Amino acid sequence: MLELRGGLDALTKILAKEVALFNIRALTVVLGTFNTNFGNAAVFGKNPFPEEYRGSFSEKMIQAISAGKVPVNGDKDKAMKAVYEVVVGEGAGTGHEAEKFLPLGSDMTVRVKGVQDAFAHSLEVFKHVTNSVDIDK
Image (tube, rainbow, N blue to C red):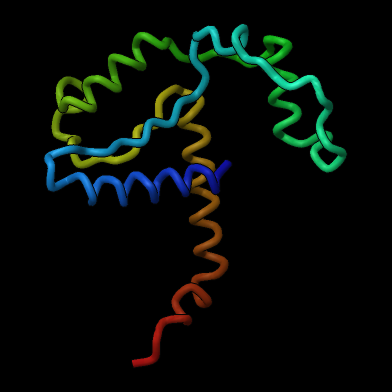
């Protein structure tokens, strides 16, 4: 999942540069769980997961969604109001027009903090390696 977010982050940054000349901004919105009809509307294939996916996060999520056991924290209407305000630079978005990443939902706080901690740990462990691979000048 982290790889997917990294890809979305890179895509947003590239897109933002490409469309900035046209006064268009790009924003990645990463959602936690919200009170939508997602669980009831989700349709999954009838074929079982391949053996290598058995017990994986993906299989567990499909099982949880199918069983209606995903805890919902967020109010979709409040979230859409926040997205609107950030996009147009009003209310919660005032002064944050240059931001390219908007995590929404209290469950996202824990997930974003986890990613921060993982990067900080990796940098601490491999700082000597990270900074030793530049071109010699």
